Amino acid sequence: MIRMENVIKKYTMGEEEVYALAGVSMTVKEGEFVAIIGPSGSGKSTLMNIIGCLDAADSGIYSLNGTPIEHYSERELARLRSRQIGFIFQGFNLLPRLTALENVELPMVYQNIRTAEREKRAKEALERVGLGGRMNHKPGELSGGQQQRAAIARALATKPSLILADEPTGNLDSRTGREILSLFEEIHEAGNTIVLITHDAGVAARAQRQVKIQDGRIVGEEESHGNTILEDGMEIHCGK
Ligand code: ADP
Ligand code: MG
Image 1 (cartoon, protein in one colour):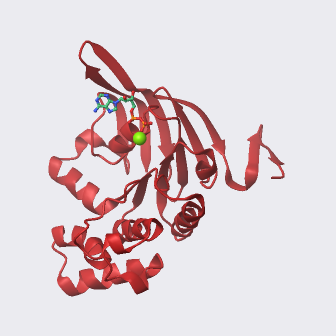
Image 2 (image 1 turned 120 degrees about the vertical axis):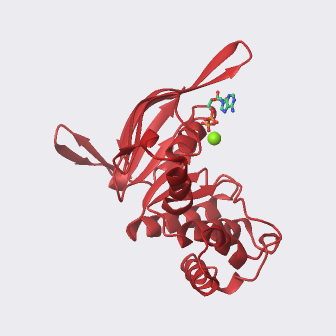
């Protein structure tokens, strides 16, 4: 689904050039749950913005669904961003004056989906994340975990093929964070492709595969699923 080859992205700060991504190559297959882990400033958000077609690389190849990104028109990219990719952020990004239901419906308003259909889809998505009883609450009347559930429902309602989450548990206490990660696992088991970005090793360990990034480069990869290490075709099972 995602293929990157030698992707470079630099920012110019006065005289200085900062390589946020200094040649990143990676792939994500359909149906995978991958964590991208690295410390603050390592390039994670820059990578997420490129994967999500919110920003373009300076050089290198980025293919989404088998097509290099530069082959998509602006119109097609806008469509990809709004229908194919579900974004989830650390700060939830819900509109405070709208109810949970209205927040989940909003992206579908922009897609001109008729009222009855979008209300049906939004309700289904909210039920799915366990917020069936809180649909008419505004963000200020919900806990942090419930707000993130509403944001996840909003991402799911448009039935995207890729879920992109940037530090989704960063604003939550550890127990609530674990509940949100269980929800990601359920969503993955239901067939979604998930790319989760985090600086937290405990969070990354919940994904199937971890890609480690440092100073804009991929510095390692690890299968975290079941604690199995693959070495020369041999499987070694480690106890926790
Ligand atoms: P992370 O999400 O891992 O914390 P970022 O992708 O946000 O890392 O940033 C990677 C590097 O690029 C950092 O050195 C950061 O300061 C720099 N950077 C990110 N965005 C900008 C920007 N808009 N202008 C200048 N430098 C930036
Ligand atoms: Mg970041």
